[in-house]
Length: 113
Length: 315
Image (tube, chains in turn cyan, red):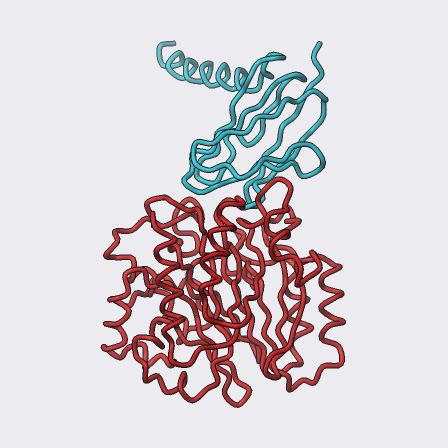
């Protein structure tokens, strides 16, 4: 029994952390995606309609945030610059850095209940 | 410039003396063959036989990144100033300068203005440009085209002739595909095919674009997704030189009659393919910078197919 509980605890912790990261941010709240080492982190994010998402570039190299379809376009973000966009309409928004297009990310916007 | 020349101790010494070695590449035309000559070497030696024998045709300058101010080089204006002074001091100056993009760092109007003011100091008759992704990063994509769009009627691609050589400027930094590589697009490819149709195969061709027109390293987007089509249009010509920037290091590859060449930056070096988290500015101690910049010059002459050339150093 004792051995079992040692293994169960980390598992429960992992599950709870996982569940928390998947829960959409509350409507009207802000959430931040960091840009670091040529990656959007987190790469995929689910939010509720009405959420403002903020991207902050931590790299010394500039990046941009550009939706693949219509939507949002930032100017170049130098180190520590930010860009925000409020997602009002539910849907899946794919975006890239236009300077380093290998950098991709996705925002899934769910309808507010 | 031969590989042997590069190992000449005098030349090597000259390279070391150049604090921020990245300068530009001089191309001479000799019997229809274009030969790239490192500008620093041409200037320092003053007796380079190939430079003297050939006709100075044009100079390639790239990745000036005006506006960059991080520690990899806090004075990009200073290094560009030195580059321009070096070009103007050349005994045999080419008529053309081709800037293969990333004129600015953040596509800001003030950066373009500074760059234009500086580049106007070049004692040459013509300046040709193609944008880098740093030049078209403003949300409205207007700053570059309002200044340099005229030559291409705002399309970004155009061609011209000079001294019997046909020059083609392509744009591959707009409308990236999800694969992360540069992209030319069908419209531009159709224009290129038409532009080359009917030209004599003996016409020397120079193609320039910012991102490499062959895949140097796909995970960092160092290539162009639809470049193979360009190669198919060019393969019948006897002398083709493809010039790119973007990766801030010299990489050269010869494939049939096509020579691919990427230029160094005047601003800062970048890591070799896949070395580190991404293709950002490479921070090295100032005294090591010439060595870092000189790295790719040697090995590529001898190993045109080796893309991990940065493992070899001059030191």
